[in-house]
Length: 270
Length: 234
Ligand code: HEM
Image 1 (spheres, rainbow over the protein chains, first blue to last red):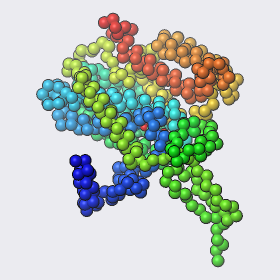
Image 2: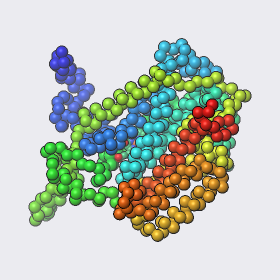
Image 3: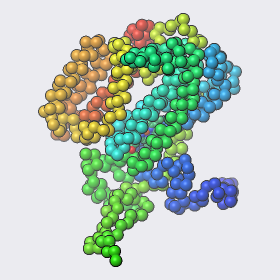
């Protein structure tokens, strides 16, 4: 069974159509594997090779990867939710109640979007602290750290603008508390608040503004900065390694590795 | 006509190891390849498979959570009916807690601005790059700063009754004090560890502890009028 499947896959991969799309071709050689990354518009933002020990759970705890994962989940569930949601008062609220009781799997869809959003905020913070405690913000990665801070702010704003959309008491008052703070900005506080809400109170205009921010402007900004973030990882020479991290050894490398670690120890951390 | 170059340049292409330097091989010396023995693997499949696995586990976790716990939904928004307390989302509750003690310009504008600016500049200051223990280099001056700053901050928090932020501050300051009087020769491994922590580590750890304490207090221990409540007693 399995071998027949393999054969079929292999045959598909040799068709002219397939080869015209995926130019790297098939094969297990290093070259083919490098080309699978380098010849793909989405993957070529990644390096073709990575340091083995950076794949260990202990290096990054995969927190950045997981943050990206929650973002992908949010985009997918968010688009599906958009099919049922009108950003108007009071229909926004009735749409959300319909999601709970009328739309099939609507409850699940909304739950998944909501919990993924909380997870994304949590994971972005965790990733920030993990990067910090590894010392991975050090030059030449300082600008990627700044991009990271921008991503954290975008994440918080995404979550915050989404908070208003169900138009229930929780949403309304959380945004009221938050937007009142913006009027404390010196000199132009009230103008800032007016710009944010499209009025003097949290009302239908505010809902529409938050909706546009939440579904268009902020997600697009997030994609833009995530792309830079990943590109910079590659350009900054891959993930940060501390000399004190234990070097993984394969049988072929053995003792030579040990020597060079001893020679290099303590150099990088200073 | 043109004099031949004194060297040839080349980059080794050993696929299993990272190339660290370009070699300049002059005619008079023999080449010696210096390389690190860092093992590398192909992004495809090694890294992508792991990323896919991480993504799948994440999805399974969140799907299970969504099956068992429903997202909250209260009554329709009613501007005439203010709930007490009206709480911001959990990640802003630390700031809302500050709003309770300081005027909105301070708690809502200055503190967040300082936090964001502080985070951004971390990698641009050499003091955050150094890896030595806080009290190793420049010891006398740093001890003086510490003995001045920690009590000042504590008195400030005490003056404004910000006990929720004061307790973590005192805790961290206590450990810093211990670190100041420990060294690589200390008997306990905790003290050796603390002594080797850099300035940036202490500041960030203080920030992290405050963040967690304030968020937990805001989420579970604040009731009507932002009064203190015990979550298990209601
Ligand atoms: C939407 C939010 C974010 C996403 C999707 C994201 C994604 C990632 C990924 C996938 C990595 C690869 C390694 C890893 O998993 O740790 C990474 C590395 C990194 N991230 Fe993020 N990140 C985000 C936010 C942040 C934040 C808030 C910061 C810090 C302020 C930050 C700073 C960095 C730095 C400096 C690296 C390089 C680490 C190294 O060289 O070892 N990122 N990010």
